[in-house]
Amino acid sequence: MIRLRPYKLSDYEYILNWFNNEFTFKQWCADKFTYPLTKEQLDEYYHNYENDDNAWIMTTLNEEGTPVGHFLMRMADYQNESIHLGFIIVDSKIRGQGYGKEMVSLAIKYAFDILKVKRVTLGVFDNNFSAHYCYKAIGFVDEKYNEGVLTYENDKWGIYEMAIEK
Image 1 (tube, helix red, strand yellow):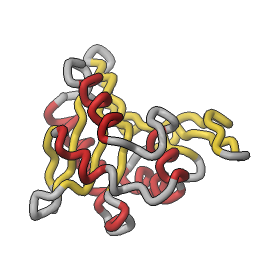
Image 2 (cartoon, helix red, strand yellow; image 1 turned 90 degrees about the horizontal axis):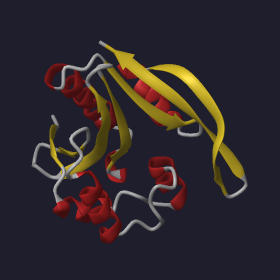
Image 3 (cartoon, helix red, strand yellow; image 1 turned 45 degrees about the vertical axis):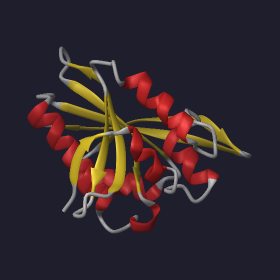
């Protein structure tokens, strides 16, 4: 069982250890952060969103209360009843064990039941097969594919824009 809570500045200590390589890091942040990730970058990220009434940075805790996941809810649009998820990451030591699926499911529940939106969106790179599969298994559907939106080394990555509706 996992729980959600608002992000705390001290969570950086955990997140910094969740990236084993630059490839995975780029899949997570789409060049919005610089590799390797630092406390200073996470502090700036936090301060950029702390006063944004339409965004929340969230941390996922395991049964012991240790951070094991992270995501951002942003672009809350109450007129169109939607919100976007981003920067979704699970501790590299526990990936593939269902934590991501449970975490995103809780994020959707929060969006539908607490924020009262009817639509949740996210984007996933076409080379992030496990995340794409995870989101589809939860109920997200591909709505649009954008080819070549990010270049990493000699590869151009496309992104699937996905959504789930209540």
